[in-house]
Length: 403
Image (cartoon, rainbow, N blue to C red; front, side, top):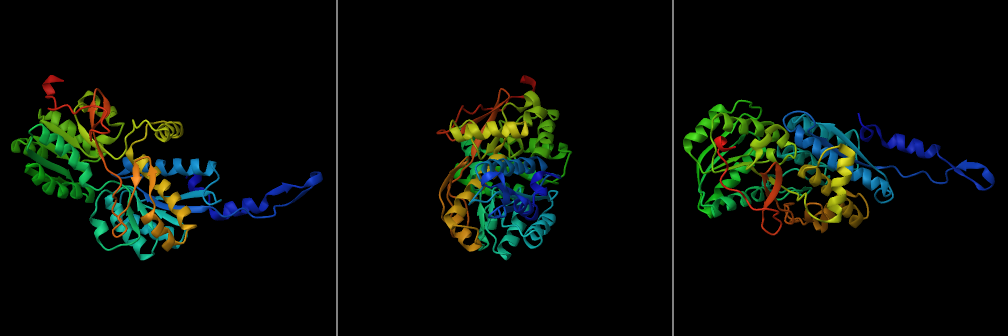
């Protein structure tokens, strides 16, 4: 249990009430004013289970921003506390935890969980209790077309995860696509976004399959992909299955002309498992780690100091979500839920991952986008879009015999 969990309203108030201030002449007198109770932010996060890799980055993004903000005096004169639970990558557990955060823990604000699978049902809780919830870990737009008023998308829409890599494929004359991914909400949202984009690029889908979310044997699906002979393999894979898909490609001695893994290959630690086999893989990120801004440099330095590893875009996204929350609280003048809801919808703020701008009718993100990266010489290099690219895409994906 961390200090974030142990620190409650009661312990803060007790400490403040017991404080003594030095009076003139060296005498002591009781504090004239009790320090205000902290603002308690509640969240459910996937710290175990199939989404744990991304969930841990998400937690650390929240924690880093809160630590930094508390060092500056907090928000609206109040310190900040993160109350969180592990939803174990289970949607039903996530729903129960948000109910607990609101009804039992009486948190002041809720923030979104990791991933579409947990966020979509948790959104029902936010709407039921009219608690604004920024969702920094969902690119899927389907949940924002349900007429809800209290949820806000904190990543670029799912189409931005795919547009760039499909554009690169088109530029290299690659038209046949194969789609595979885990049978999860996010996997489906990515696959469902491909047909419309493919029509626009003059591309066709020659094979599509979902494998079980907890699969660890990919021989059958890769053999079927190989038989379909696509130019491009788009694998909508998380870290836990992305490395398995890559290893099976090598074992099957199959190298499509382009190979994309979202979002598993976006993890900076992917190379630790993949080694030199990582080179040539495309993936997606919501954050440019090489952005030369002072804020970006400070974020990376502080994150490494706190957690002893490099951040990924999940950490940056959750950090950015709290930047937005702070701006909205100031605009609303407090934590009244309806005023805060309106402020989140209306505020414009520059964050680590772009300029926050929301469609106030739906909560869909209008300001953020995504970037396509490629592993080159063991490093992640952003190759799309051109205005922020740090290198050019390398096509085709190298054969296994040539590595």
